Length: 337
Image (cartoon, rainbow, N blue to C red; front, side, top):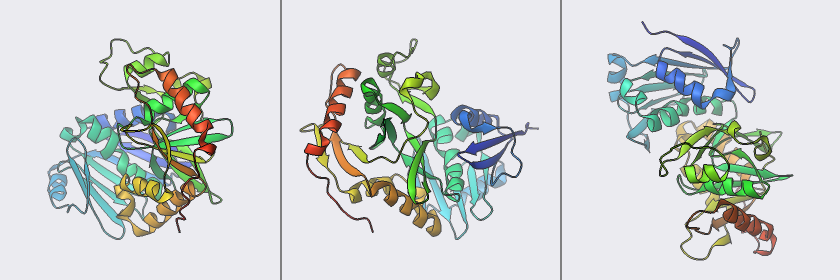
């Protein structure tokens, strides 16, 4: 009989009760969301139940139509109606009840054995959907801050956001988040917090930040808790960014080029396939993204390619580009509604 573990999560005031009978899921939550863990919470707003997948779960998973689809280490797809969403990889099954604020995940061993699919996707997506019902919205990006300003770094996975954020730390900037953020409107003003409080960087980058990597494979990114960074290099939150950089391959000239806010919004929407699962939540989510971008100047940024990578030189170049931004041309001003 599996042991049931009771946990609580407190994500910036939104409380989640977790009940897990899957050891791999319990470990993944403790590993990825450690800063938010609390004792089991009374009166939590949201609930997450994690159980082993049985034959009837697999049969139900086979009936899920692919209305929504993701590609990870293997495909993941979902089917929604007015109040619920079913999500599966063909072996495990998650059911999200938006009205009740509850998600139940039946987890197969084959899913739990694939970290990229399980811990980073299948386990987190239902939680992120529950958080949307409380006005917390996911943003895939890195965020750095310096004094009273902050810069949001966006781009496709593997496009260099984390490396550029690390480089800016060598020039007086502080890291809020390396990859994943939560966005909330407070009195109509956007605010960003880190979700997964960790670093995911190549060993060569970590060593240039003064972080030990042991005998790590130089071709594989390492994940380290954010608190491994000195306190002087990190920040718990930041003011809404007034500048957004979308990283682009340095195929031609490096540096900043003006970018329409509508293009940035399109990128954010493409990275949130769950956004349209529930129309009411989609409207609120879209409104929050528009509020985030409306006061910002948006740029496409092609960072210089340095071989071998010199983190300090890369940081100085980007910092100089940001300092000269006011003379680089006016951002394209496209109203978002």
